[in-house]
Length: 318
Image (cartoon, rainbow, N blue to C red; front, side, top):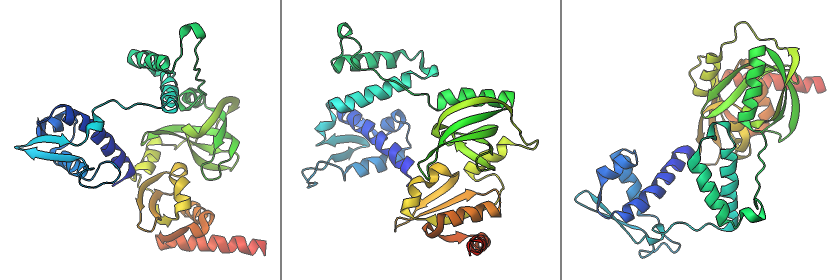
C-alpha cells in the first residue's frame, strides 16, 4: 500500500472512530455513505482497529469493535470522545499554518477559516489590547511565483529564478527560457531551457525561491507540446522509459527531483522506480551520476550506454 493511501486511510479511521463511539449501533451502510468509502474497505478499516490501542497492547488495552446485525459498536476507546488538547507549540504551529493558508489569494473569502484562526489566536493568549501577540510572515511561495511564470510565458520572456536542488540542497540562480507549465500529481512543473546547464529541464515550482521576468526574449521550440510532458508524470507519453532500483539514501530525494510515475519500496529498503527519459544519452548521464546507488537497470541497453559514457569520462581523465 502506498504512503498516500496509508495516510488517507489513517485520516479516515481517525474521523470514523469518534463518530462510531458517539453513535453506538450505527449501521455499516450508514458509515460507508457518510465517510464516502466502499463497504468492504470500511470493514477492513474496522478490523484494523482491533489491533490498535494504548501502549502495553494487552487484551485490556486494545480497542474493541463488535458487530450485531450489521451494526457497529466501538468500546474501550474513550480517549477518542474528548477533543484533543494541543500543546502551546502544536497550537502555534497550527496557527502559523492556518495563517499561511489564509494568505493565499483564493482564500480571501474563507470566513470559517478566519473565525477559527481568531479563536485559536485568543486561545494562545493574544489580546487586541496588547497587540497581535503572534505575527506570521509568509514568504512568496508557489502561488506568487505562478503569476511571474505566467507573465513570462504570455510575453515570451526569459526568467531568472532561484531554485533549490533536491539532490544537492544548493540554492542556485538560473536563467530559464520558459516553454510551459504542467500540473500533475498535485504539483506545478515549469518546463524550459536552462541556460546554466544548457539543457532542457523540468523545475518543481514549489522549489523556486524567487522568480523575476527579464527583458530578454525567450526562445520556445515550435513543436513544444505540453501534453507530451503530462504523460511523463503518468507514464502515458509513449516516450522511452527506464526502470531501476535506488538505494535508501537516494530515494529520500529522488522523487522530488525527477518525474517518477512508479515507485515500489522493496523489502531491503531499496526502491524500484520507473520514469520517462528524453533519450538514451540523458538516461546514461543519470545512471552515471547515481553511481553505486543504482542497480538492476532495465532495459539493458541503457545500462550499456551508461557504462560506455563512464568509460569515456574515465579515458578523458587518464
